[in-house]
Image (cartoon, rainbow, N blue to C red; front, side, top):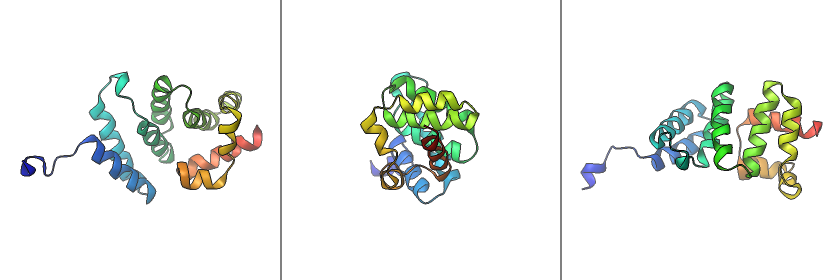
Length: 144
């Protein structure tokens, strides 16, 4: 039985490997693994998972803003109230030039949760977004 599964990738392994690559700044490798894991889920909206947001942020880090926005919008459809999703969407809108939309989206985050996005340790350690995302988020924070 072990031989049957050896060498086969599954979505969970890909997600974990993508996260490990992301944490070591191997964004291209992380993107490959996140993309493959997302493709394994298919187009069923119920299969959309929180890790898709990480995949989107990696795409943004690599300069693939349109693909990142598409993924975040899909995650937002499944998790519309999630503060991290709202913050990520604000980042993408800001970078696209929609500063008013970005401010609105960022201010949709409840006050207590929004304060976490001002905490450098929370940003670097807890959510550990890629650097490009954190830079844009800081721009939004100074504008709100």
